[in-house]
Amino acid sequence: MAQAIVCAKASVVCLDFWEIITQRKEIIYSLLSVTMYSCADLLIYYLKDRFHMFVIFTWISAGIFTASAIDGVVRRSPLPLDDRRKVIGLLAINSLLSSACELGATLANVLATPGDSVAILNTSPTVVFVLSVLLLGDPFTLAGMSFSVLSVIGVALVTQPPFLVGTLVEDISNEYITGVSLAGGSAIIQAVMVIMYKFIGNYDIPPFYLTFFNGFICLPLGLTLCNVFDVWSTPHSTGEVFALSSTGVAWYLGVTSVYLAVKEKQRPVCVITLMTSGVVIVMIGQYLLFRVENTWIGYIGALLIVVACIGIEVSGNGVDDPADENEEAHPMIEKTS
Image 1 (cartoon, one colour):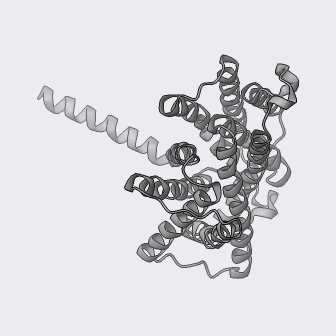
Image 2 (cartoon, one colour):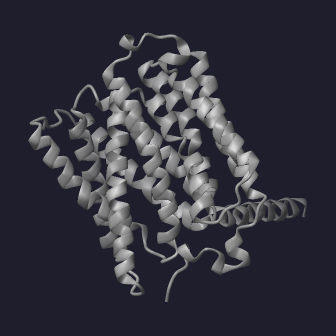
Image 3 (cartoon, one colour):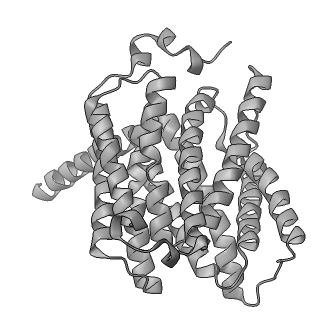
């Protein structure tokens, strides 16, 4: 009898836990995304001394395109019939932005350390916060602005620019400066893409179309870059093939998970801030796998980024989405009939 009571209580706890999980699926999607992106970042850093950055970009694009094609054949997801012209336009714009972000992030991981590039990429929640205020009608709060400034301070501590640490400009390589700049540009593009996911999600577009269009554009672009600069090379071992292929698949899963998370969660800034743990994951990974060390100031900066971005999410969760009170408050994201 006692065992039956214990089993019944355990079942109730499991059901309650499952109900919580199913109600907050955006957390699962966000954590899956940050895990996949972190794996891709570390794989890119591993491959950078073996292959040219354009070759890595091409393999990533091929992985995204192949995984998307398999997903499309298996699921056979139809494109929504309503406003098909607008849907195709959104997908085309998103694909161009995604291609630029993918190329910029890949080159940033090669030219700079993955810890620094990921830290800069994770400032995108602050940009999402601003865009959410301007485009989605989210309230502008003092807490959100303060956490945005804190995030910038964290990035400065991680990257340690010359004017802060007293390093001579000559000691900073042009490659590193280029990598940091590309990471910053990719962060802005990523923020715009997350806002677009909100618009695209209102049309209930399957994630297959986002990744397929992305691979369709990036794969020819990568092949063209390899041929123009004559840098194409083939892998010489099974391990290299696996690493190159895994990078593309991980990127595909990362993009898909972010989109699904934004569909589940009304506030894009709350989704993308859950992905800031990638800073910690990559910094730990680059030390354990490649012995790439950072200074204690850099780790404090990474912690400030995480705290700042989580603070933006917490400060925003206490405010109801205006769209719930009045759907007409956000005419830009309404699904027209």
